[in-house]
Image (cartoon, rainbow, N blue to C red; front, side, top):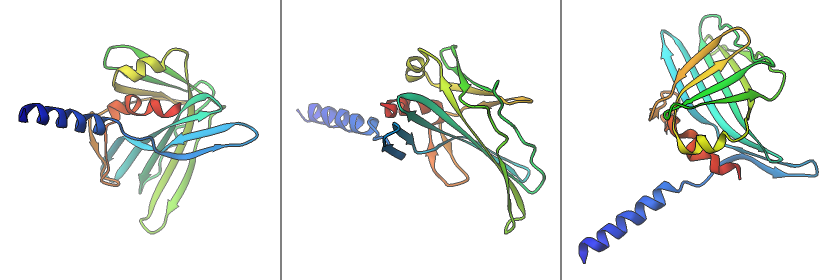
Length: 189
């Protein structure tokens, strides 16, 4: 009887742990439509030789149009080259099941902006873009982890390898980049 109670308790705890509530940075409806955006999650981080780069994802539901918000932040004491998005920019997501999902940019693109941090004598470049999910791709993303992100910028293509678990040096936050879509696509409803 004790074992049965212990097993039931553990299963209940696992079920509660697995069902994380959705967190939103924006959630409103007005006369034009509705807009809902999840809190940004860090999915890639690289710190090497005085240069740091971070990739953040959030999901957007803009009047029932699902979008991936991609944001890149780079910080360095040296000049940072711009990685611009244009009308042909895409994000390719390689899943662990071998399938490749393509996301298309939703606007004409941009080159981001450069900010100078005088206190640390560093340059910071922030680039972002919103990408559309193609038909019938969200179902695949809900089932399989992402192993690689390939971003096609205007002038080059950059690959980012996804980790199972990432403890950010930026803020100490633990995240699970490989499972970003599995954990968060439910929040678009």
